[in-house]
Length: 196
Image (cartoon, rainbow, N blue to C red; front, side, top):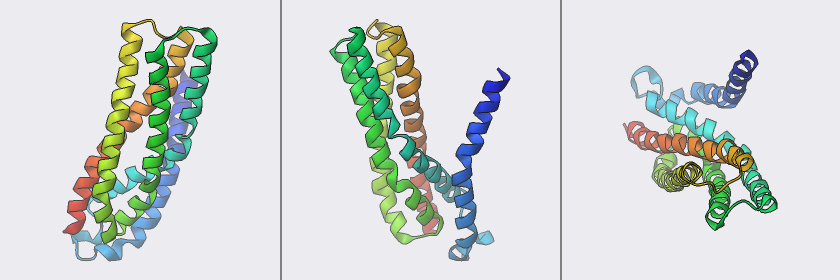
């Protein structure tokens, strides 16, 4: 139990190194762009949106592993022979949506840096990026929810496949989708705050 907690805390600290270090480096240098604002710093919502976009942007590289995991799960389902067309479709759908999440999130790191530097191009791009994030991650959240509902209501998946699908794919895709939807809302607020 203690090792699990220590491992989780170590993972969180390691995860936060890149976005925090990048944010601190850029934020210090971008203060001159915010000289007309009280305190000569970006508003809190802009800083938060920047940090979250850096954090989610770094996950895009790791997110390319999830389609591979889904491929192994489909191969396992085929080998076991325990599944139906809907089950295969959900596993493949989760793999595809994880890949689309990774592709949609590729622009988050440069966006976070530009937003913090008060780049006018970032304000224009925020709306389209927010819509793309909202649509992709809304679909991802629906697929993750459908997977959990299918696992709860039917016996479609073998128990080993069920564990891998729930904790290896559906949960990460759902959590990333929720975080991206929060980021999309933050981007809308940050865009209006950076105009002022």
